[in-house]
Image 1 (cartoon, one colour):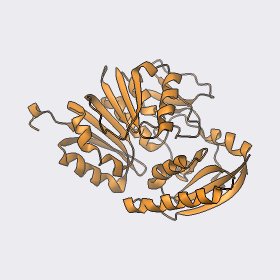
Image 2 (cartoon, rainbow, N blue to C red):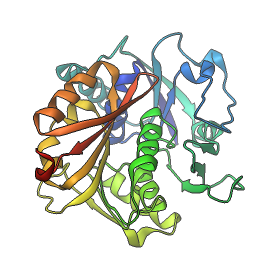
Image 3 (cartoon, helix red, strand yellow):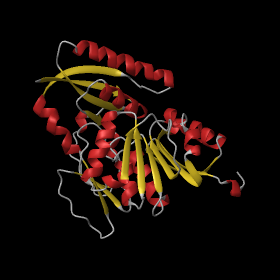
Image 4 (cartoon, rainbow, N blue to C red):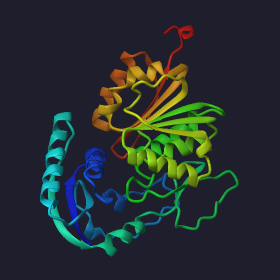
Length: 318
């Protein structure tokens, strides 16, 4: 089997939507090459190990690399991807250089090379994420281990937006809370919620690949009985009350379901949102406050922001 590597030179802001486009068009794997990985001191990424070649990284922006089968439809597929990426500008997403190149690779190269970027990493005081193929021994008695097998379909759980989300969950989640995870992806936030004490997690994602991935990873971590996974568009038609709603997706998507989040939270419940590029932070804050949320805290890492907002109960004067 021959494969082509599609390389897109773009921005950090565009990583999530472009990766989603690539998955939806049948890309067998996505790799992100961000020059910040080469220079960041990583105060929060304890124990991370890298084997990176600076020559493979852009001077600015990021490379998103996807792998497509070489067949008679390759040209049409590439054109569809280009058009879908260009359409992101309609949502005010900065695409940067938006340069796309295509090159042929051997199957053996991409099938295994990406794993060198994925090592055990401690992303919060308690939680360490490790790939299934790595042997890892906990360094403390209270360390919580999340095993992930992204299968090249999702991130490894070490992206700043994921780290910010898990750190917020670790700080605010209470024992026996009910959690809703909107846009669950690999299921890492759902798994983290259970390990941190949640009694039940309801995980939703529009992508059936994400639903399958969350189910696989929850079973891998032996907590699948506490995570109910369902294919769903955001919180549409969801009728339940949660103590915490967590969502690590784009700012443009978050603002579309703030009202639904309010309706699906108990009084004094928390809405933890991440995946927000710094330039879009105020847009999310405005929408949260307009719908009655109180901003409790905002945390930043690199260009990304996480917001913790509280649904003020009627008794509190909302």
